[in-house]
Each structure stands twice: as C-alpha cells, then as structure tokens.
Image 1 (cartoon, rainbow, N blue to C red):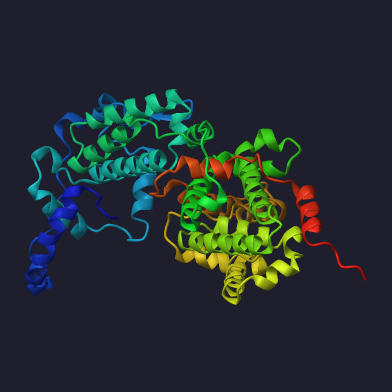
Image 2: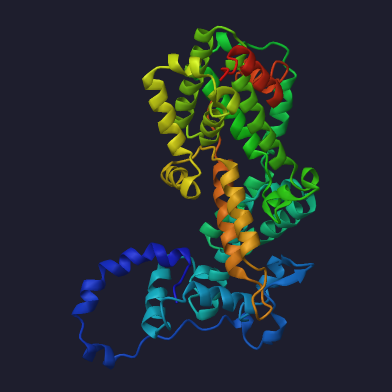
Length: 447
C-alpha cells in the first residue's frame, strides 16, 4: 500500500538520504528495539460506533459529503474508502510495520493535525485524492456535461467547497479542489456554431483567383476544426448517423458530412467553370498546393476532400486538362492519395494520426466505420447476461481519441472573407451539373 499524503512524498527524499545509514544497521540491532507503534487514535474518536460514520452519502446517484460528516467519521472504513486504497496499492503488496514507520517519519515535517499516519488516515487521503482526480478529469475532459446541466454544476461546486473546509485536508488537495472550482466557474468557451453563424453574416467575400493557396488552406483548416469540434460525444453512440432519423439523432455528424461534400463540390466547380484549359490546369495545381499545406497543418480531412474531388468522374475524365498538369503536381497527388487511402482500413492515415501532435483534423468517416464495425460485430452483453465491458472499452477508446483532437484548437487568425468564400454555395454546381459542364468542355470522342 502506498501513502498518498503530500507529506510522505516530500519527506521521501529525507528517507532516501538516510537509507545508507539505515542499511548499515544490522538485523540484530533491529531485534533489540521493537518497531514504533502507529500513532494512537485521537481521543475524540475513541468509543464511537463505526456505523455512525458514513464517509459518503448518495442522493440520486450523486456523491454528497460535508465537512461536518467527514469530521464525525474519521475511524470508519467505508466501502468507497476501502476500494480506493485497495486499488491504489494493489501492486505493492501488504503494508508492513516498517512501511508505516517510514510514513510516520515522512510526516514529521507537517503540522500536528496532519501527522496522523495510521491506516485510517492513509485511506482518507487515498479516497480524497481519487475523488478529486475523477472530478478533475470529468470537468476538464467533458465540460459540456456541466454547460448543459446547471444543477449538476452547482452540486459539484457545493461539494468541492465543503471538501475545502475539511480541517485535515492537505494543502495539495485543497489547491486541487480550488482549481476544479475555478475551471467550473470560468466563462463558457465560445460556441463553435456561433462562430460559423457570424461568418455567414459577413457580406463581403473573396474569389478563388484572388486568394493564395496558403490563405485557403489555413481558413479551410480552421473551418474544418470548428465544424468537427461541434460534434458532441453522444452522437457517436448507437450508429445514429445510419438510422432513418439520423438528422435528429446525429445532427452535427450530418453537418460534418455535408461540409465535406460541399467543399468537394466547390473544388470541382472551380475547375470546371472555365472553358480555358490553362485556367483549369492552374486551378488543379492550386488545389493540390492547398492539400499539401493542409497535410502540413495535420488537416487530413481536407487532404481527403481535395484528392477525392480530383478523382470525381467529372474531373478525372478531362484528359486534355490533365495532360497540361506538371509531373511534380501529379507525383504530389499520388503521394497525398496514398496517405489518405482507405486501403488496409486507412493504415497510412492511422499511422500519421498516431505520430502527429494536436491540433489535428482527422477524417471522421474512418472513426464512424470503426464504431459501426464494433457495434455490429460485438454484442452488448456476454453469454452470462453481463455487460460486455470489452466492447465498451473499444468504443471509449475511439471516442477518447476523437475528443483529444476536438479539444486542441488551432492558433490561426480568422479571415471571415475567405471563410465565407468556402461556406457560401451560391456558385457551386451539383453532381449532375458538374458532369454536364465536363461534357461540354471536353466532349466524349466518337468511336
């Protein structure tokens, strides 16, 4: 069992420095003097009935505790405390008297009220640390739970405020609780959907010819991340995006899919809008340059959008146009296509995601395919009727990776004119119109 009190860690150095002298002592000397006893139980706790001390009470599934209750239950070993300390020290074996003696020495530098180093004190510290760690992870990784539920937020803040007033709370634990409260009280971050709505209200917009590849790539990356970051994790459960009521069950996943298709149509429209073969060639090379910059920005979603747009039948069939595209551009296209290829279940893309640091915009379709495979191929319950936690862990791993990429934002300055160009679909052709334009520009050869 390990002692998680802050004092033990700080005094560990002192114990280590004395280790050489302790090792010099023989076992004979140790037999002559019996090991010191654990500190006695405080007088105010003697004679108390253990059943009077319940460290945690439950109210509709929410753990509720108060400093008054915690003062009255110092000698009890609740189920929650026992579980916390058992799991915290599961790998260290049964504690020995020598370990408790060392812990007593380690706490020598603390005030009197913090020098209780008996088993109950260790258990309380471990339980407190575990609860604070769970709350910190919940608040930092799933802040939307508290943004959507004011009552939950209020209950957690009240709980932490009472924890802070515990007279035996260590300084480190008090700071941790205060930091969680500070995080909860911070103003809600700007909603991604609000930013997108503000962009659409801008009247001015640029044209493709007046924008550089770098400007388009940066703004496309910022927009892709904004739209990707809007997706709440609840939409990844139950394959809602594949159901008849998908627009109600997974609206943000459907918006992400629509954005992907809209950008693909925009790229094809910019290439096909001119009858001049040189203009079409320049448009292709410019979009390939955008894709290459997006790869450097770890926007793999945009890389796949652009390469798939160039492979659409309306573009791919333009033989005269492709003859004028440079060999360097064609080689770059092949390289980018290989990166985001679906071959081997997106083997190359997964390797790139594994080796890149956020911020990043992955291809959402890859994760949706993984989730569908798990949902359809693995039952929710085992043969014994128990919850299949193996399946839940696989789903949790995928959603955790998605959340990691969602939470790390790009430090790119918003250019509303460029963003509006990418989002407004007034001059964008649909699939049928694109193919008609392609046939008009380069008619089929009669055989």
